[in-house]
Length: 294
Image 1 (tube, rainbow, N blue to C red):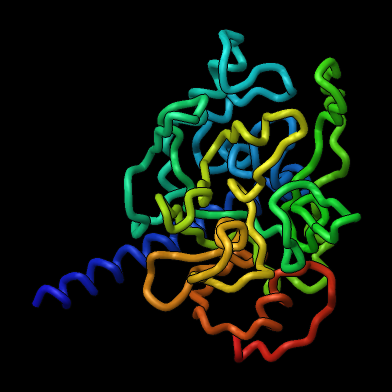
Image 2: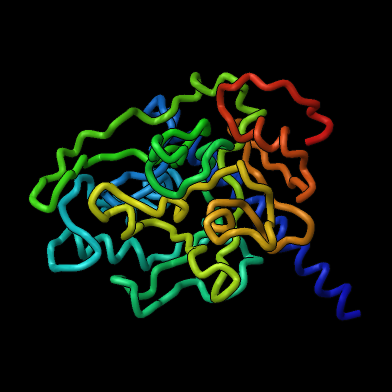
């Protein structure tokens, strides 16, 4: 009887996870209807990500109203913006948490500048060609989250070159528009599930909800806190920690939920063909694949 009860509970959690993604998808579509563009993926030098941009469309207006816009403030200090960043970092918005995620809602580590940061279960798709968790370094063939072929990219808002520089608050690029998703909204991943993995198994697989102190370090870093790469497979085992932190995974047996850009949610198995995973991870490579295999 116990295994049957466990299976029934997991089935209910799986349905709730799918509903979370549907609500996130609806919020992003409503955001796009208002602004005629998708949110930025990660705001390097500022701190927020796509999750903060859609708060008002998730009926989280109290949190949306306190989001600072601009570089002023950070994870520490007494500036009003800094206080708001700490409020955002520790505020649970449960639509961003899969009910099958194990462990506490919030995390506190000795090295954190903000204690009690809330964990996030969903990452924006930055593309299927990314092999580096920072900005790109072309000379070393490291393609980062700023140059992915997906729909949510890391963007440098500050362009700080040295310690005395002041953020210029001029983003490198505009966010992606639906019209730029040439592969089709139903064929392109928008959001995917991730596992927050503790301890020795990963150590760096930290994904947070509404404010990212690493994004607020100079021009930003460690963009897998809010973004993913579909270059790697799902629910990986025995791989580098860098690949693990950028990849998708879940605590549902056998696969992960993917929110497509048309708002639909699909449960996709871990054995998905590499070529298909790469195709659905890109926005405009015009790949051809058999939809029945996805």
